[in-house]
Every structure is written in C-alpha cells, then in structure tokens.
Image (tube, rainbow, N blue to C red; front, side):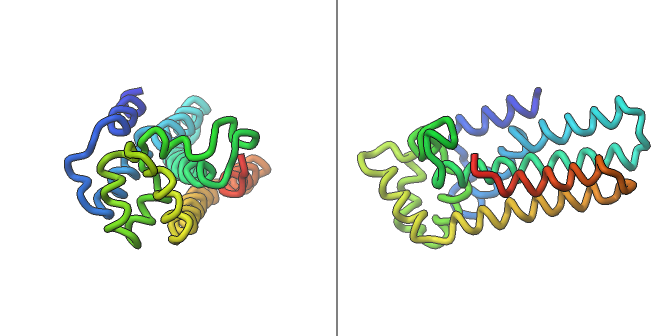
Amino acid sequence: IEHLVRGEVMQMTKTNTANSSKSRLEYYLRKNYFKTGSLMANSCQSAALLGNYPLEWVNCAYRYGKHLGLAFQLVDDVLDYEGNLQTMGKPALSDLKAGLATAPVLFASEQYPNELNPLLERKFKAEGDVETALQYVTASNGIEKTKELARVHAELAMEAVLELEPSVYRDALVHLAYKVVDRTR
C-alpha cells in the first residue's frame, strides 16, 4: 500500500528534478513502478509465498508481476491517445486533460522539446495545450516508443516466468503477458 500511495503522491506533485525529457521520463517510470508495477509484483510474489513455492519461484513471480504491471500501464497510456469512451470507459486524452504527462508525450518531448516543454511545465492548463500536445505526439514517435517499451517489459515478464517448470499454468502467464500489450481496452 505504501508504494501505491507514494505513486499517487508522485503523480499529484510537481517534480523538482524533472527539468529535462530524460529526468521527466525517469520520474514517470519510477511513479509507474510505485503505482502499478509494485502492486502487481507484490501480488504475484504473495501468491507464490502463500503457495509455499521455492524462493527462486517467488523471485520469478515478483519479476513477472513487476514487468507485467509496467507493460500494462504503458499500454494504458497509449490507449489514452488511441482509445475512446466506448473502448476505454473514459474519454480519450483524459490524462492530458488532467494535466498528467505520460510516456507518449514524454517521448514526444524528446523530439519537440521547445514546443512541448512549456506545456509540460504548466500541465496542459492553458487554452489549446491539450490539442497542441496531441498534434506533437501524433507527429512524433512517442506512441511507438511507448508501445516498444511496453513490449520490452512484457518480454521481461515472459522471461521471468519461463524460468519456472513447463506447465499449462506457466504458458497461461506467458499468454497473459502477450495479451497485456495486445489489448485495445
């Protein structure tokens, strides 16, 4: 619970260290670990501990959950740009409208720092900021880089679980990691 609260606080507060694209992205990824990655990691680890599995399996479960959670959050960020109310259950661009800088816009700011950094600083609060940010995210490789990072985390989750003995359950976990990055809602 402590990690979840820490992640929420990180999301709500302005960063003092986030003055470059790289530091903003690092802060964002750390926040995602606290909000989503650690929740999934600790849940998977707890299940392995309660199942009385060997320590190596418990560690595999932790790594699987961590990377699955991070991949899930990255895909969720992409869907905020590509989804809609019917598919997501929330309006598109809700993160930008809430003033949240997620991976697609952070990656886009690496290509368009002069155009996006002022918007990031004011959390997309000025008239037209959301639309301008969307324009630059669309023109950039921000969405593709976010999808690629999600695939990397899904692959790391699969690698962790592939250390377990072959079984239908292990294969289901591999399939789940694939489904997380392939989802549209």
